[in-house]
Length: 536
Image (cartoon, rainbow, N blue to C red; front, top):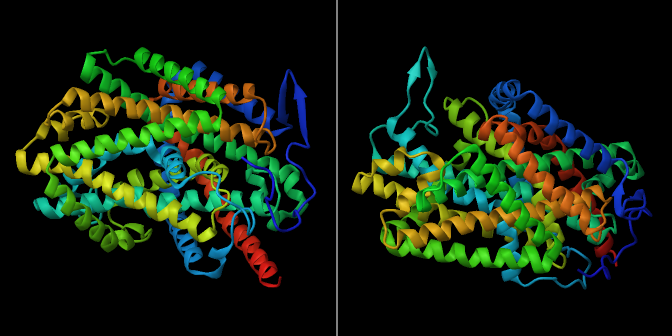
């Protein structure tokens, strides 16, 4: 990536990336962010292993406690991210180019989209593409259940008791809501802030730089250290959650296809093997590693998508894309409403968790998107980062979720509905031709998404802990890629997916407050740039 022509203006600060770094044992790391982050994470791993039963009980309590307590702040924050992002598309601020007026994109649209999507939510789409629509369909079809004046069901909104078609639309609207505008707006806010302050203001590519308009030179002191350290924790635990989902689904697929036994040991071995592959990708670098794997995954994802469309109920899927989009638009405001809701199980267990998870992922995805988005205008950036992935998510969920629900409604396939989440995709593919080939492609997709997430995540954490340097020694990325796998393993041992989800929520909640401040800081920076360019 070129370091020339990064801005038409003078840098906001004379601070240079890595100027507070220290060199030790061949490493080039920021003091104190690297050491504080590494020590706390190592301590977390040791304590979780030492107090196994207590850890399991603690994580089981933590996730519902946080989502119950912070439900409305998380939903309100998600709505603000969407409104701010969409406003940028229609205002003059959208004309600002990331990197200056003469900056050119470093990647083609195809390579850019592939990396956006692989980093953003690849594993999640594979894990939840069938399981979430089926779950919402079943709960909607069952309708609202009230005990002692409180709803105990998990149906979105009011449900649709006994009405298969209404339950289908309700399920798809709720699913797309969780994978559409809101998560991508969260990513866009972070990615835009990092891109702008790095490429247009000459500041280091690290989270603290996005707060320069609010904190000034203090951002290089302890307030900035706290921001970057929180970003490391959020990234690591948010990523560990996704790796846990990927491990669960990959081993379930291997069991489905080859009869490999599902045990804690097999999951650990799988995570270790995939982490080893990720290390090879880390050593290969951004262009040879993440970019190439992302493009391979995009091709495989398109093949699997096309297969389900053709082998499945093609007309139902195609019409479903349009019907589900309409349902999503119709229900987005009720689903976004944080107050006076009766569907509290759905709001806490699904939406609040998702928003905290996306927020915990935002430093990772945001910084990675920033690394590959120089040369785009703000309008082009926001449109492509929010609207294009949302459209792809609608097509993906309508295809996989629509095909699975059709199997239940039309063919009475209760097996796919009653399976555990991680095996639902493979049970759905079982009803179509060449099941083994399609299932094998699905397993490969999960594993390669696993690798690209680990690779790009280690790249991002290394940049943060190297004071914004993008050319730090490879050994540092190897260290973080290794620890991502270790944390995922430890959390699986210390409470399974519930522990992973609890860790993501615990880091996502405090980071939501930082992102709201980041919006104000970004707006101030963009307005200043707009006035200066207009005055030239």
